[in-house]
Amino acid sequence: MKIALLTLSFPPQIGGVQAYLYETGRRIGEQHQVFVLTPVAGKIETTAVHKIILANGTAPAFLQSLHQIKPDIIIVGHAHPQLLLAAALYPHTAYACITYGNDFLAAQTHWHRPIFNRLLKRANPLITISQGTAYYLQEIGITNAITIPPGTDPARFTPREKPILKPVLLTISRLIPRKGIDTIIGLLPELRKSFPNIRYLIGGTGADQARLTKLAETLKVTKHVQFLGKIPDEQLPDIYRRSAVFVMLSREEQKRTSVEGFGIVYLEASASGVPIVAANSGGVADAVRHGETGLLVQPDDQEAAQNALHTLLSNPDLRTQLGQNGRQWVETEMNWMQTSRKLQEVLGL
Image 1 (cartoon, rainbow, N blue to C red):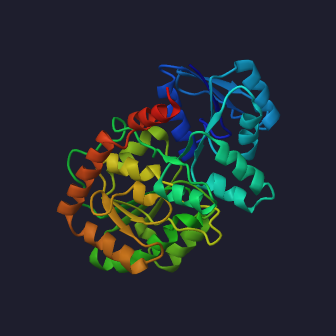
Image 2: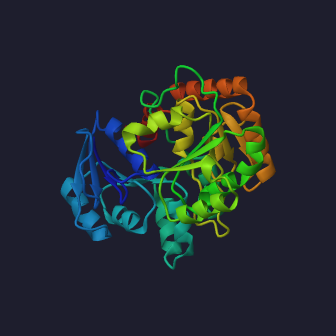
Image 3: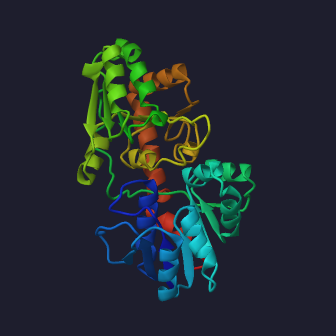
């Protein structure tokens, strides 16, 4: 079967959308012809999909390629007006669409919202990545979404042979205010009373780094905080294995135009046998099982977050148990093979 995947986000770009489309696309491409239509240039590390680089990201450019390919199935890789319009204008087949939260929420503040939502409702099937994002869709009157969560690669992310005993916290994230890194830095003065050698590793880049650095200086915890910058892919598994607890306290913006739709990093931590402390916002509850793979707290509840971190850092047996639970969950359910299988089922492949 011939499949056209329309997207403005694809490797070599990095991100959750890019990972979802690449990892599922290359697995589906083992049995079907998958054509990725995108303006994103650059090579990819698979021959299972055919990447067609467009001159631009407008609907006419996508539509022209669709007429050339003549696909049996169209997948709109994320909810963007140009992609939805191109798929809707192609007269020969229906289209599916995958949504992640930020894509369709951002459109709710634009003049084209009524048209956008109408095109989104026409998608069959309409797929979203978590119960949280399904709820956001319901809030704008779209009730037919099917939830297919992302996965990760348990062969790439593996636990260390012996559990780490040092109090090392880790966040892997873009450095933006919504990720709650400032909250974690703010907890360090109290946490170091119980754990004098506590370290907080922060992987990623972003515009918020200067503010976060200043905050660490103000709180006199600079020696406990290490900004790792952009981490090369080949080094990422080892970074997870260096941590005792993975923590990310994402919060919702007031206007809800940017949310944590899922959080693949939580699954990467689980695959690495690392327990998690996370804020229960957006779709995070689908990525972290409270009391099983980690501990969930309410966004901006600093006392609860501090207690959760203290509980895990002071209890190596609990860390080990949650880490083992997370590893087993990824091996059996939350991996890209299972995500691809579910996606193929709803697409009728």
